[in-house]
Length: 263
Image (cartoon, rainbow, N blue to C red; front, side, top):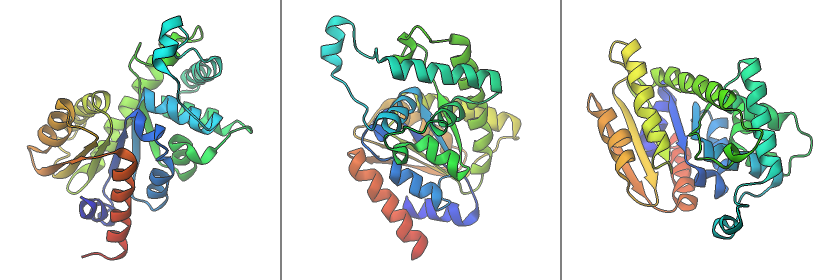
């Protein structure tokens, strides 16, 4: 797998990393930012949960709560700052023509009080010129509970990012790599639809690329929508199973070693 990523980097092909929330929540942003800095990752896609964790890690330096306790009295996910600031960012993004990922990154970039800017994948990508996309699921994310939530802004900025991801997939053809890191449902589903858009407009391309699903346990959608179906027209798919905070750094280390000392 590391060799496939290194070869894609040498050939100038896309290496697209798709993230679930726990990738960010377990503190792996610096690992991913390092791969972007090295020119390995060319696009970051993530679900809405990952974007929320990403914002909170940079803004406050932490991102967790006791769901069971908060659910008892209706306080789960009701943080004022997170809900207000992210929804305001989407409203501005809608007005400015930005995608959701860009809107979050710009909101972080504009602040001078970040607890730890280095823990944001989105901010790191913006600083390095790497494109991003955030794919929201209405009603599935805590910020949709907030009075400031604007369905039009959420929909427009996230839909713009769907188009951005579809465009990024074009560069997978003949040697690119897609890494699905910890997303069991949203990113596999979004990827499949974005891929069919890319192929519809590209005379059946991209083909001949590598996919990999890395997660703590096996799920149906990543296996079918990332590993198997997209590679039927050429390419290959992998499944890696293990804890994110162990497997992602090991994979990144192997990629860096392969780039430095190709077999």
